[in-house]
Image 1 (cartoon, one colour):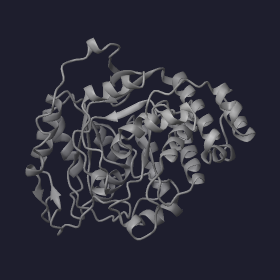
Image 2 (cartoon, helix red, strand yellow):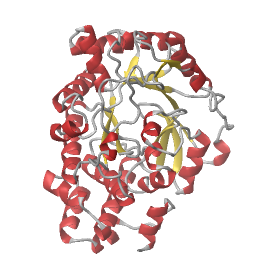
Image 3 (cartoon, rainbow, N blue to C red):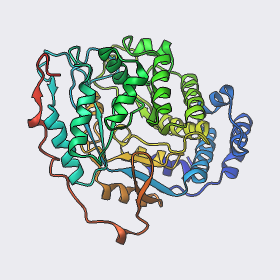
Length: 421
């Protein structure tokens, strides 16, 4: 294994390898695909599949070209956002086989947060410098149709300047079902009440055959696309995601990415793309023998590098999910085409419930240290990728702040009761 591969595996600063040097070592078919990208050509499905199967020298060439494209698109800056996750309930009827978070309403550990508790957590985050709260939760059968609207109102009434990044397409679809409103009217109402953007989760793999294996009750691909594109057309941006490392194949990655690329070319509404490695330990999908145990290290590199290559010129930012990857693998992926470290999170329940062990909080000063450790420049951003501050020198860093809620939050969760929402 050469110096470049060893450094990537350890998440250390990699000795610079130019695309030209890496391309000379790889197979001709891979080289042709990557040279096409470097010449601003848009890759087709077959070319994407060729790259999605890259190993060894072919993978190193894919990584080198992806990192070159990253530099072209965003330079040497790695961004992060100061935010807080708030999951208002874990009660959910959907029953996704890949999820370890959802509970039935009678489960001993089923919980709900009151509006006051959600607002208290949002205020706490704001006081610690957060500019965003990310709000998602399970889908209880007894949810009131206007619950999501009223939760937005409660947050924005107290914190009008806080960006609310909330409600996946699955939750939007549920709100539409519960209220009986047309989709565009419902989204317009949510925007008027302060919805700033929506997570592009509930995507998993955008192929109905795969979705039937993962969660038969999940909304179909056509509906996911309809909700996302309608939101974009109304001026509500979203993230985009893909869950990998379970029952899917590389061809599914490519179809998924090309679909996202086509949506972005129509709407321009995706702020970033986030590859999400499957956390397997506590999920039915893995325990019943239906899935592999997540992705290996090289697969993480391949997913992030392929994303940069196929989405180049469409979606400018590729984010790592440090809570799923861990810091070491995240740093390797940030040298393989990715450019965003994601959020501080402050609390995280969904990945942890599935078996993730990489923690719930990374402080801004920790992000900056990790970023400088691989020779890049840290910058704090907004949810929509506006730069708030670039930290060229350590002397520019603000004083460190440790959130007061780091060790005391579960006591404010209430056991779930029927009719709570």
